[in-house]
Length: 466
Ligand SMILES: *Cc1c(COP(=O)(O)O)cnc(C)c1O
Image (cartoon, rainbow, N blue to C red; front, side, top):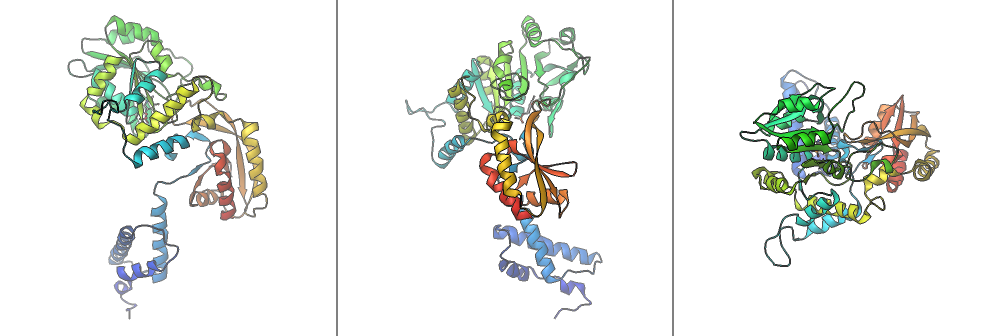
């Protein structure tokens, strides 16, 4: 049939490959158009490589196995649940804050059916979108007004657009705060993208009130403070207090805005052996006009940005044409609403039942050790590795509280029949993937970020990869 001397004749036909794949029970359950596209691309790539002079055309069966692997890789790249064994509580690659079951079920009810998102049920007329949530957020932040946006980056852009534009588009910021928050988010770039003109003052480590004062011109629109949420400075450092900056702003009739980012709403030092992270309410008490924080960092909700502060400014921001482009949808608004309601119900008397706060406040001996011991006995007989429990360090993550080291407990593996990297890879490729980390040729799964109800899945996967 095929001419062995002509490699082109060895290139399989798309239909033939599709027919063969149809018989494979281990083909990833991808929709047919995706499989067909994958096959076409692979056949085409093979043809190109033969054209380029490659005469090593794979056997048909090897070609099909290669496709099954590729389909598997594509399937595993869809968004699906992952077990977080990294010990990093707010892991941006793993979706930041997990949401509580009650929040998810509220979202599911609202998403599945119609809802009153823009309906006033008393009058039957059009209602204010997210009005109740704004009311609750203002109460939680002890602010006169609040609103929500797509994320904290959007909140910052909106505040800049509203307060620094036209003739007064200059924003004064300390050089010590021109920071990069995370992948693709640099404060100076965001500021310029919003049309504001950056006026940098001071030095990286020292900025004085005089520096701010000397930079004020008739073109100044606002004074901006950016919280150093993801790094700290030590040594020869100084900056004016927020109160001093607020007084300077008042003197010159300029709004003072703080991008707080991290989003703590309760005293973090009461959760774990970590320092105090400023809350939105505290920052507003110091007199800043507006503050913005992230919804999915220490707040423990879905991706969103919270803006709180002066009612005239919040109302003005909501009238910005850009606000429409950066607003949240019904599911996020519901997730935020249920999360903030839990904070308000807890009322400072108990720790709100928010998964992230539960992870941070779990007690090593009382909560983690018994689970660790149970996992150890379940895994003792596994042939592929030696395992023990070690004390570890968990982190807040998500660019918050970089100094905080939370004592934790980790399963510590020494694989006996494969490399540590291979073990990590196999666990990532499970149908319920596990992300751990490697230290000194050991693979670790930190128990602080694994939910107790996932323990059974962890041991099942570990047994399976042996
Ligand atoms: C994280 C962070 C942001 C960005 O928040 P997103 O919600 O991810 O957009 C902005 N500013 C500060 C200070 C932050 O820590």
